[in-house]
Length: 120
Image 1: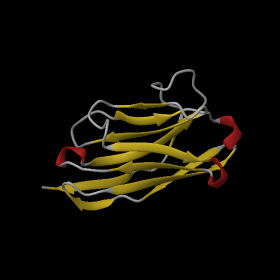
Image 2 (image 1 turned 180 degrees about the horizontal axis):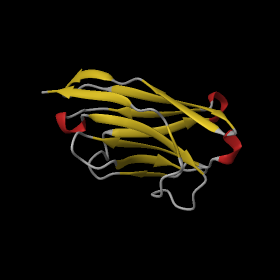
Image 3 (image 1 turned 135 degrees about the vertical axis):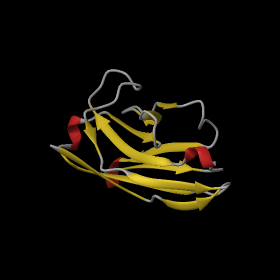
């Protein structure tokens, strides 16, 4: 089994930055894609950014140019660097991982989520 534990959420003013971390433990060789999804109150969960085994990436249009996804295999950790945050970025952010054929398909493993709140 694979477990994901997120950290790094919090409260930040608009225009500020946060970095989310996702530590992977367990059968890490069984995953090829790591990603971040978010869910705001009353909305569906949406893809934010994802990174594949070849370090190929995909970003939602709403975060392109502001967010950066990366992974450190030596530390078994994935990161989401969020810059120029906006109030509409407020959501619970979930780390996701799995063995999938396409970047935009979510894996079957989810973290517990971390709250990000951006004040105006």
